[in-house]
Image 1 (cartoon, rainbow, N blue to C red):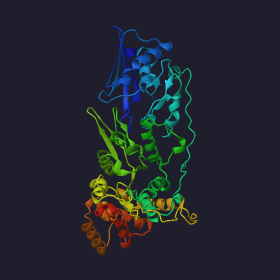
Image 2 (image 1 turned 90 degrees about the horizontal axis):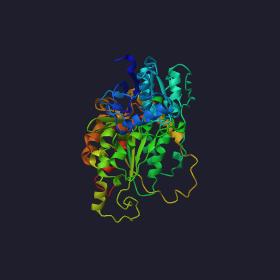
Image 3 (image 1 turned 180 degrees about the horizontal axis):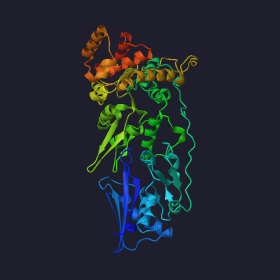
Image 4 (image 1 turned 30 degrees about the vertical axis):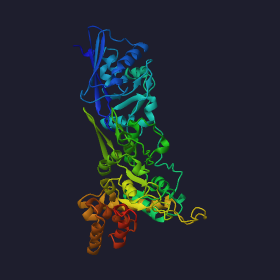
Length: 510
């Protein structure tokens, strides 16, 4: 075999939010005309042989008349999409001697080819850019993908419009221009809502602040029209801005989902609110090939489920593992895909089918059995994973018609306290209070002997689980942090205990 009949080109596949290296090996040999692609390609990759052949011929290159075999290694890694068109075409050009194969070693290539040879954008380019940066190679890709690929920084990006431009650059006839990205601002706030918009509900605002400070999950329960959805939508406005690493991880999930990159949302925490008719695949992820669901699109942001009992029971139970682990694994017969799912969970529900059980105006006509059946749609294990359960009461008469209070706190004021609390937690334990596990809870959430007796009595009275026990302590730790207290005091513990209304099984009394 002559050296000119074989060439290797580097590219990247997609596996969750990762982009493993793929070596594209092109080999030409005499024989009957054929063009085969091997290495576990899915349908779109198999079809690339037609796109590549037409693109090469329309760009006035010579397509080999004999046998062409393209291997995508490693062979056991699934390959999808049109991202391999450009590297396959370059591999064939190098294998047939039309391009010096030694010029390919310092580059990685991705891009779909039009039949004319033009380069079309692909999905999932951000994980590719991050992996290429780590490998210290130069990335050549379609022009429309350049801005997104520039996010990681410290990466040489050479965008192109056409296969001929890439060919001329590799022959050193006409160099591609390095893409110079415009610097992104440190953080952009696109929030058009504010916590000050919420009338009344001081306890609910307090719970929202505690939830934001410790990254605690939150369940809001109350009659219709009490502001539950309005409160939940304000949670992102009091959360700290994302760090660079968090922003990249969140953008990577959007990238593999095919969502466009918007500069206006850079470092703004996502807020996802799927409808209660969403399926398990839509919420958790799935399909073939697996794609991330809503919980992954909410990575480092907020996932809000309104009308929680109306969601399918199977869908809700699928949330239990991601709430604990911060990721979700989608298993298929031949491979697995893992997606990040570290989100802050907020849910809202009515107390009964009609919604007016706790309204105080005797409008509720639901029977005790109907209320139990309705609230029973949410399993005990899922409730256990909710740090804060809060009843949101009906608004007092005249609250909406009265003049707004000039002293009401805005999101900016509350966010300042949240940021200070988060910084305190990072300095003490290196993580938010909600992420404390096992011995960390014992170490950082220590309470006095009298408070321990109080907590034990509450555990026995309400039949709380060990998981609920630890969550009460972690919420108490956050309340103490907001009060700038080194120790958890009785007032902090009793307030934390008050945020477990769904653990009280006498459903007619809250």
